[in-house]
Image (cartoon, rainbow, N blue to C red; front, side, top):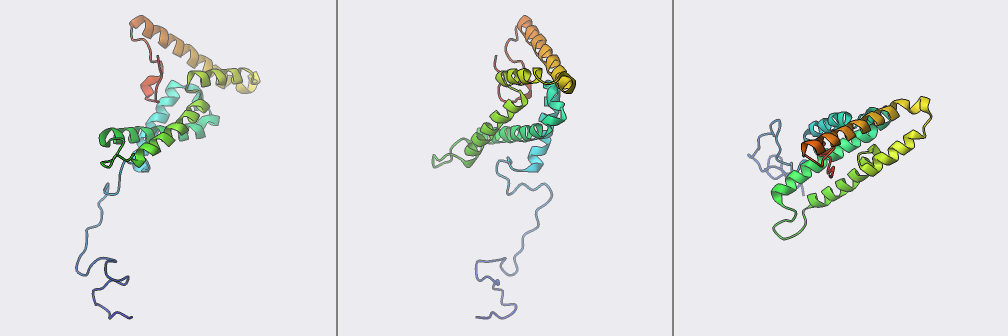
Length: 185
């Protein structure tokens, strides 16, 4: 069946396309109409991830080495996703009105699993840092001296910070200021 031109019926049939005479204004810059939690939005995640990456270089200087850059980028992105997802779930709850888990809760679980591995690769947990130190101590001193020295300095700084916290009575958190998900005490 051929429709006459200008009939007002969309080419796909009724219910498809914009009804004749109707229009909606285009989305303006910064519109977030389709945004749910934002954990997939580069516009939301990039500034947070950049902040995490910058803070990590200060907190764990060995991660500034070129060999860590890909892992740092993945870690900072995942940390940003986790922050955004946690905030959204805090506001909206883990389950919907029907008692069903929200997809964002499942995504957060996957992101947290990924983060555990990335934190280990970067030496951001006590056990992972110990393994990293043991591995680097066996590296040829000429090739690995800069990374090993950065780790030694970081270790000394962490010990000094822990001693200061113990003396000041703040006890506990050594590396938790970055918000990297724990840092026990």
